[in-house]
Length: 257
Image 1 (cartoon, one colour):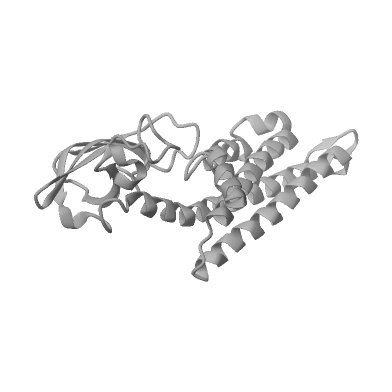
Image 2: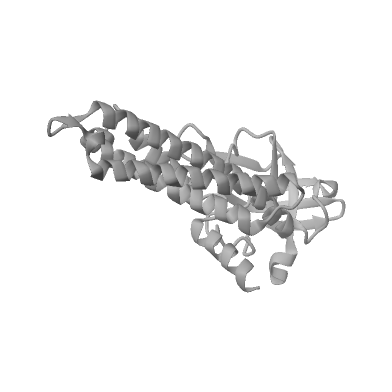
């Protein structure tokens, strides 16, 4: 799923990657950034503009096979988290594919991308629920083992409130995620429901991981315990598949339209 570009992320209609129609072929020029499994995928769906003056109505979705002449993948290193998940920059230099590789019609690309994101934001929410639950489990376990002032720290009200708040967000995030997934299963995908689940669950997971780190104190800051990794990994959930700022725009527009 190749949508983001080096100079363009949230403004998905302002693509710079060009798609030229030459006879029975589509020619692609440009680059894509932050593409998950970009160097590993057998097929890439590339979103490009066939007519920049048309804005989102000029966007086209094109299927490109790995190994096609002119396509290069450059792995991205040095990420804060999710380092086990390969991420690449894709460069298209005169990449030619049959015109039949276009999904839908020219101009359908933006709609296809948005409808895809309405679904893929739900797994991001689900993953966030998992991180929040792991953070809570680790915090509960450590709070039983760690002693201060003559008793386990889970006897301290300050710690108990942290654990309670984490439990609240785990349950509410799960229900928001289930609802968004259920709507898709019913054939009623809802952009706002997906945005709510993704935004709320990822914010909650980052907050839970941060609180778990605080419960661990100094030990939370080193690799001996997993909570620092949870914090680093889940930060991306607030960014990809649409930043949480964009999610709030999606939600707000559903209320005022």
